[in-house]
Length: 83
Image 1 (cartoon, rainbow, N blue to C red):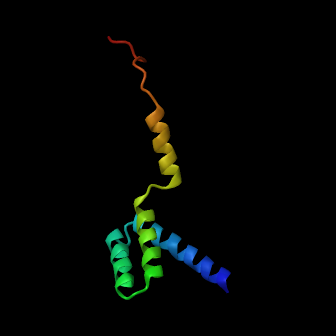
Image 2 (tube, rainbow, N blue to C red; image 1 turned 30 degrees about the vertical axis):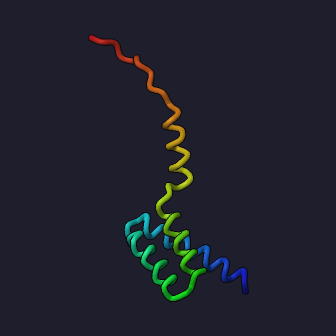
Image 3 (cartoon, rainbow, N blue to C red; image 1 turned 120 degrees about the vertical axis):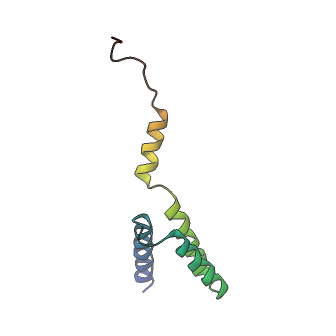
């Protein structure tokens, strides 16, 4: 049973992150849900939603790696000759 819950939580997390990145739900809605859960005394849910909010704000692993590679590249002055 615990594995099913764990799988369900992972699936829900992935769906929420992708929906936010696609613009279907705003990140503010996730933050509001976290605050609501906290207000209701469900600290575990509030924490999980807060983590999801942070995850939506971070670049994907491939985006991060591409940005790191771009930052390491140096442009080389040259190529076409002046006319």
